[in-house]
Image 1 (spheres, helix red, strand yellow):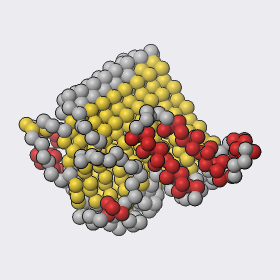
Image 2 (cartoon, rainbow, N blue to C red; image 1 turned 45 degrees about the vertical axis):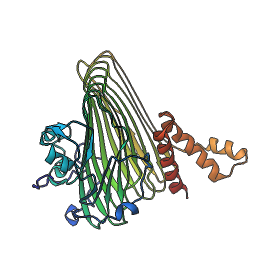
Image 3 (spheres, rainbow, N blue to C red; image 1 turned 135 degrees about the vertical axis):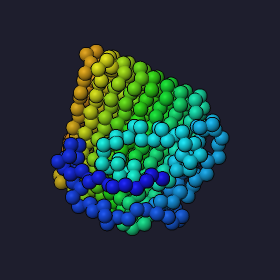
Amino acid sequence: MADAGAAPPLPTQKTRGWEFTDLSELDLDAYAAATDGDPDARARADGVLNPPEGSDHLVVQVDGATLEGASVDVDGDGRPHEPLVASLDSSLERFPHLREMLGSLAPADDPVVARNDSAWRGGALVYVPRGKRLEAPALIAAVQDAEATALSFRTLIVLEEGAEAEVWEQYLSGSDDATVLNTVVELRVGQNAKLRYVCGQELNERSWIFGSQRAEVARDGALDWVALGFGSAKGKVRMETLLAGPGADAKVTGAYAPHARQHVDFDTTQEHGAPNTTSDLAFRGILADRSSAVWRGMIKVDPGAQQTDAFQVCRNLLLSKKAHADAIPGLEILANDVRCTHAAAVAQIDKEQLFYLRSRGLDQASSTRLVIEGFMAELVERFEEGPMREALGTALERRLHTLLD
């Protein structure tokens, strides 16, 4: 567990990067640090994802208590010799050399990260040594349950050279009480390693969420990253990918679907730090009622990162005239032999599409559902047939049911 220290002030809307998310209503002093949790809370929590069955690689934390994954059952000399999925706290005690990796990717000057640094407990580690493969997906769940508590959760995923793993992480609520979740995720994908990382949150709609998630992909490594943001009342999640070695590749797929007065804020960065790297980012948002969303994306091409191929797109569909979305793509290119493209759109449901479907005998509700399903289908089709595609499709269908019913 981290040592407590003086907490820096929260950002304001005058802070760069926080212009769209107002934190003036958040009084962190009113939220005590999460401590021991109710073991029954995990069963009460409604998961946003249905992960594959049969995995025994589990880390489950409720409030401040690790309920599964507390023991470290692999040998090693400084670092594990076999794949390890366990509590981060316990893993660092057993393998202290892993501490040099913790915090090496997260931005130390971020006030939200600084608060996490001083307060996290428990957490989760996924470590796959060189040339090893995690045979079944690792499953991580952080559940908030106790009223008026703040949980700082930390995840470190390390794949050494040639390693492979799939990790499913969820942030959930076991009650309807107001809480604050501050999560920091660090993904290290080694040379020629392959990681699929799926992260979904469905906190209750009285909660706040802050996320700082950063990945680094080495030479010829591959990252397939999926993010689903359906819950919470308000918050901000940063997702940053650094393609650090030649041949590195990242595919990032995201979906959000707020309703009522929910506000979601995603800030993504695709940084190309080496030549011959590729990135492909696609986000979709569906907004109902008086909800609001902002996506701000940046493609950065560092000096010398020639033959970069980068793409980003964010499209939003508004189901209400009172819903609001901002989609702000950006480019920062410091090399001259690159291909970088971006697109963004915010629109209401096409009345002509609805008219066409109505003219074929469908009612208004069925027509609307078909249009929305078609809008989201492009995300699902980014994945080949299998558990990931099925889980993403099921999660979107469940959320659509919430928005329309």
